[in-house]
Length: 265
Image (tube, rainbow, N blue to C red):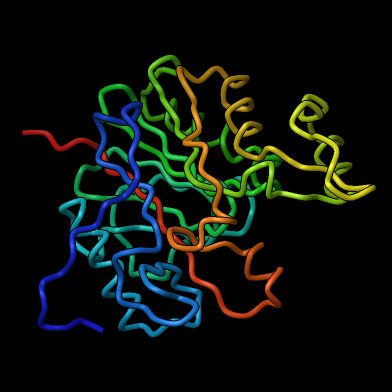
């Protein structure tokens, strides 16, 4: 909960590719939550206390210089729906979707992740931005291409749009079984290059971040890169659903990634 001490300054991960837009891939550090949610948990659907969640999200909103209620998210469902955010909605009441776009500088749009890929988008001038949650199901459904298309519908040109894939589970950590391998290849034969033989017989190691970059490049985006950070082994900085599952399950927090259009004079 909120205390009387000064709020610590957050230090999210950033990319020069998104330099004209205010953005950040936030870690789990710098919040007030405790236990499995320690400390900057921003998932409104977790078992964390409402007071802690509001405080954590207030800190993130403050980093962007927007009102707490203007830090927007959606109810993520591993699909391809994109919301064009033009006004705020109450915290925790976002529609079912997995991406947002906006050109409103008073708004910051966000996704939460704990192994899935957070992908932030911006035009070169920072005027139109996007945020997408891309697990393998959402990526296969086309959430990244849909986010780019939504930005183009708002007036962006594909060649001017940049995207950065933030911290997610990396290939070395992402062991998959044959059912997932088959499902992905059934929808995208070109994804075969992002699988390597697994550490166990009948399994594969999957490069989710690389596949996301590939799909964006195939869709004609100007530039797409990955930060190359693995959420599973980095216990200090990142929540990880796979890590929690391997440890026997239980509650888990989620880190937030957010972006806001550049402020105009």
